[in-house]
Structures are given as C-alpha cells and as structure tokens.
Image (cartoon, rainbow, N blue to C red; front, side):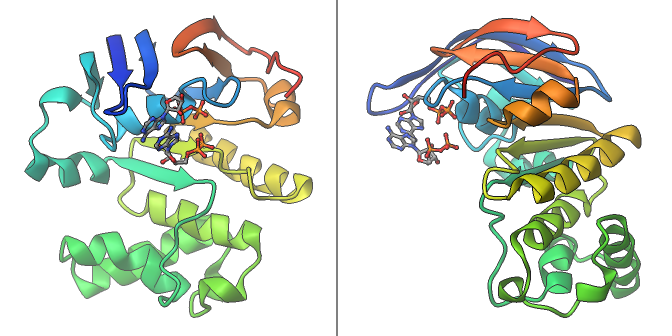
Length: 228
Ligand code: ADP
Ligand code: ADP
C-alpha cells in the first residue's frame, strides 16, 4: 500500500531531511512516526501525499509512483489519501458542512451524493449538530473532527496525520485518538507523526522512530522511547 525504497530528501537550501528511508506499510496498519524535532517526520509524511518530492529513491502509494507522478495526476492521488494537520487548516469563512463538502464539489459530484456523504462523515465524527457552524464557533477538538471528516469524504484507503493532537488538551487528544482507532478498525490505514508519548505507550501500534533522517527503530506494538 505504501512502499519506500532508499528515499533521500535534500531541500533546496541544502538541508538533508531524509537519508535512505526504506519501509513498507500494509493495508489496514496503524503506524506512529516518532522522533525528535527536526528528525524528518514531517518530510517523510509530506512525500506520501506528494507535498514534497524525493531527491532520490522510489515511493509507491496505492500503486501511484510518487516521484514520476504528473502534476495533473496529483488530485487523483489526493482523493485516495486523507490528510489531517496539527492546525486543522479549515477554511475560516466556510461552514462545517461546506468545509467537508469542498473536495466533492471540486470533482462535481451530484448535490444528492454530496448531501448524503457529508451527512455520513459528520455523523461518524459526531458533529451532525454543528453542520452550519463556522470553524471559529467550535472548540479545537471539534475543529479537528471537522478536518477528519474532510479527510474521510472521498473514503480514502489511507489517512496521513501530522501531529493531529499537537494543539489539543490531553482529554480531547484521547477523544480524537479513539476516533482514529474507529476509522482504522473500519479498514483505513493510518500513518501518524506524533509527540504524544502517553498515547503511543498506551494505544500500542507499530512505531517507526526517525532520527537524523533515518528509520532507527521499527517495532510492532512499540513504545515512544523518548523523554519527549
Ligand atoms: P520533523 O517533522 O521531524 O520535525 P522535518 O521533516 O520538518 O522534521 O525536518 C527535517 C529537516 O529538514 C530539518 O532539518 C528541517 O529544518 C529541514 N526542513 C524541513 N522542511 C524544510 C523546507 N521546506 N526547507 C528547508 N529545510 C526544511
Ligand atoms: P513540524 O512541527 O510539523 O515539524 P515545523 O515547525 O518544523 O513543522 O515546520 C513548519 C513548516 O516549515 C513546514 O512546512 C516545514 O516544511 C517548513 N520548514 C521547516 N524547517 C524549515 C527550514 N529550515 N527552512 C524552510 N522551511 C522549513
């Protein structure tokens, strides 16, 4: 489902972010990506949805050859991958429903299909009652639920999340993690960069530890392994 072979990434300013990453993530896995700040976690994640391109090496996601992918094919890839960010990245002037519907409107899905699907994903994340609210009217946890609903709208086979609980208090973080677990239990692969030691050590999953742009540890049901 996701396969990297000897992937290197050097940014234009010369910063070497990844040095020879090889990894395989199968369908249905839940994977934490941990490591110190500057280790290369975000870069590793950005390569998967083609926000960044590798300098060297091969990356396959859902059969897409990432380094050869033509610009005009990027939307096709992104429809099969949901992305969730630490800072939510919601459109501030659009309602919850509009934020979630956006990706379906872009592909000109029928109004009926949009209505049905938006209702489904809002139900799944527990926000049906907030469909007409604006993001500013919601708590951080609710905003993250909206962004998860948006990521799910095209029924992607993979969800990629970069520090999704980074801006949330501990209790809300747990709620959001339970939601990710539920999504994973329905068969969606999840790859999540996180600094949340308590969550990683409690909800045991596969752990990829990245340091200095390399995978230094790959454990099934692993531990966080850093002071923080
Ligand atoms: P992490 O997510 O683990 O904090 P990053 O992938 O953000 O690590 O960063 C890895 C290295 O690449 C760091 O040295 C960082 O400064 C550098 N880096 C990340 N993004 C860029 C960028 N857009 N341009 C230049 N250097 C970058
Ligand atoms: P994170 O906490 O997710 O690692 P950062 O705060 O490191 O994020 O980076 C925020 C943004 O700045 C990212 O999009 C990253 O690519 C970019 N960035 C990080 N380091 C550098 C850098 N040295 N030069 C330019 N851009 C960078």
